Image 1: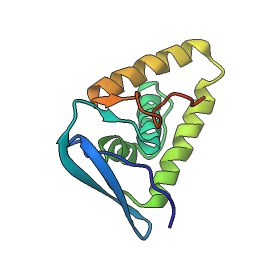
Image 2: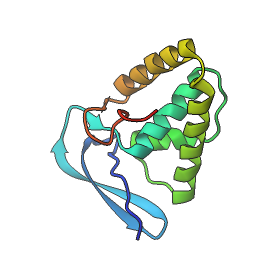
Image 3: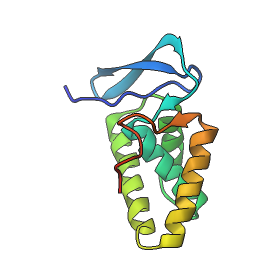
Image 4: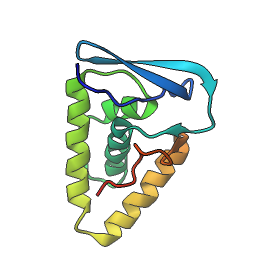
Length: 128
């Protein structure tokens, strides 16, 4: 069974326990509430896709990216497609410093909007 990144439920931002059922990720939350949710790898990819859309890059899988950002369950192949869209967005932005700065502003706004924190090891730090 493959390792799964933890994601939190938007309706109940809390500590999470990932569980897999075949190829689908099922997220279970504890009752412990937190002010901000940490960003998992999939959540970070979803944020990048949503930021790319706001920058006019026309990425695919927008609804799935929204689900990833809010901590919803999805098929592993959809998660892989979100990751691919995030990589494509990264590559489109990487060569343009002004676009990178704008993308960072948009990402920070999305993080605030969804009450996400990059303070954990799985956050956006260390990505290129």
